[in-house]
Image (cartoon, helix red, strand yellow):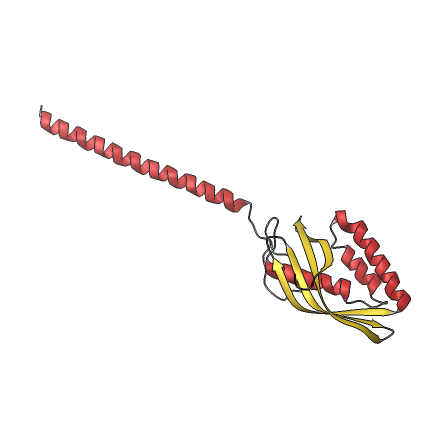
Length: 187
């Protein structure tokens, strides 16, 4: 029996076992990393939805939307609220209320009904021309700045720069209006 040869073979086998153990450890670590990546991606699928009109590409995830989608929705909501006549305010109010968050429905419905009554009583129209949209993906809000013209019996009574904050909530694959309020123009 050649003891030196057997001892060399034993050392060789131990080295191979160490290399195989290292390889198995690296493969296991790769599997763990792959599992973590898959778990992170599982909750962030983006769903393509269609806004009232499509002007730009956008994305939607579980609870957020892209700035482009927020801008398009804010333009649409501003048009529904601010670009009205006595004959169009009722149907625009109905369309607007279909986008309102359930918690805000009653408040906004009352506000729009009061505004509709006021516009009809004085025969007024408002025209809003957006000039700037500043979207915040983190807050899911948009500040819309523009010029609001008010006409009473066809005569312009006001032409002012205004800014409005429009906040949205996204849930259940649908965009909901949370807040629509005037803010100082410098905001």
